[in-house]
Image (cartoon, rainbow, N blue to C red; front, side, top):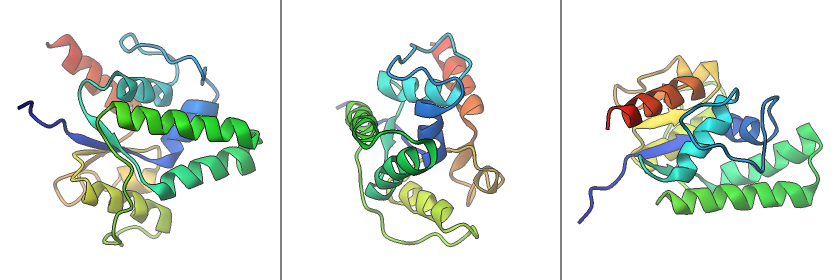
Length: 164
């Protein structure tokens, strides 16, 4: 029986930037390594490879991804729906899942950040990838979950791949 892959959670801001950030090239997904100028897109590419970890998400993250794309970035609803479908496919391909976690985290003033931590707790994530300083400043959260920026996450995965 194969060893289960570590669980990883991406914050909404990583997903948004991967699709509409200044260096996003969606629907193109570059294979990593080498890395591109968009660490958020590179993180998405790594999840798409489904080699090192399983990506987990929640209905809340998916709903907010669509809402932010439409409301804040002017993405057409049909395109936002296709982006959400792509993320759901990546989650599935990686061996992860979309779950609705129970509320357990109240460590951060921002309610949204606590919902990301709730997801990490529920899936026993080893890593949360976020661009949010309020979250990354908590790392390692409760001495068990690394919270890192996409560039650091991608760099670590690339180093690990080179070491194989």
